[in-house]
Amino acid sequence: MNSTETNLQPTILQLMTASHAHSLLLLRSFHQKELASMLKSPPENCEISLPEESNLNEWEVTITGPDSTPYVGGKFILSFTFPAEYPFKPPSILYKTRIYHPNIKTDTGEICAAILYDEWGPTLNVSHCLDTMINMLKSPSADSPLEEDIAKCLRDKPKEFGKKAKQWTKDYAM
Image (tube, rainbow, N blue to C red; front, side, top):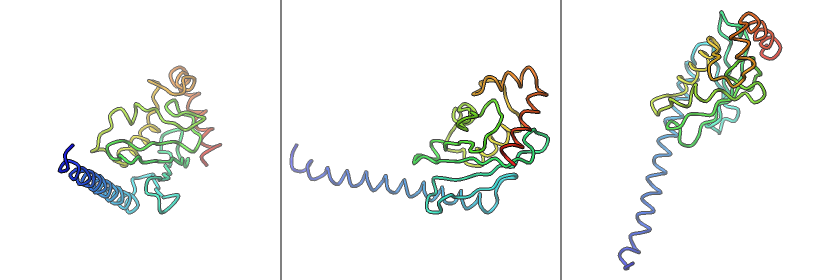
């Protein structure tokens, strides 16, 4: 390596670091604008807050169970954790409120990854995530379940599924 190459290396590294820092600032700005928009005009049946005001990467979302579902009137609390690569990678979403649903783990609150993550792209956003969560409550699916017993109940005994989901909503979300 000659002295010219040696002298260029820190400059290239500094440029790469500066470029990365600029990208992170742009993403942070995008994230702040998205949060401000959501707080100003949240989607129907949703409330958004920051558990720690200084941490934009952790959101708490409360979804009110939609009408004409066994979840009606329930207040379901979800945590949204945004990776540093957001919006290129989706947020991690967990239900903190227990819920009787075939696509949500009853013990951890994990959601079925295929529902949100498989088709994620940088043009999608929090609004898309919230729409997806609400649609999950409106239309539980027995396909690709995380809770096979609940999916079986939904498939084979839909009235019993509805009763259990209503009871869990009453027990855990009201």
